[in-house]
Amino acid sequence: MASEHITIMKNLCVCPECKNNVDLSRYPSVTTGMVIECNHCGMTLLVKDIAGGKIATEIVDEGK
Ligand SMILES: [Zn+2]
Image (cartoon, rainbow, N blue to C red; front, side, top):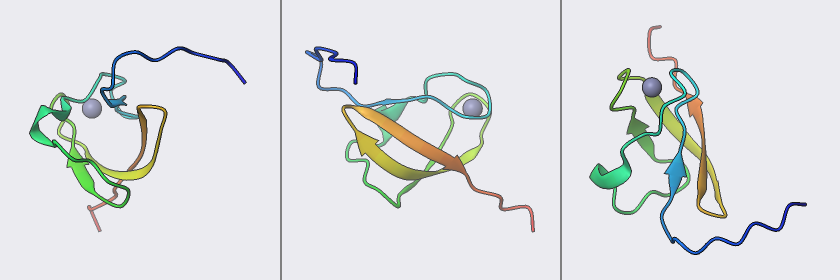
């Protein structure tokens, strides 16, 4: 386990589609199970897990 010293209490979310950091300023309180949208590619992302300021997301396949 890496012992990163996190000083900035800001959640970080990398879009799994375009690999950009999603602008979370539109989502002040991100919680698990919440659906957010990537401001770069417009992909809809489901928040799977939040740990250590990093948000893990999964692409929501809504094209069905
Ligand atoms: Zn994206």
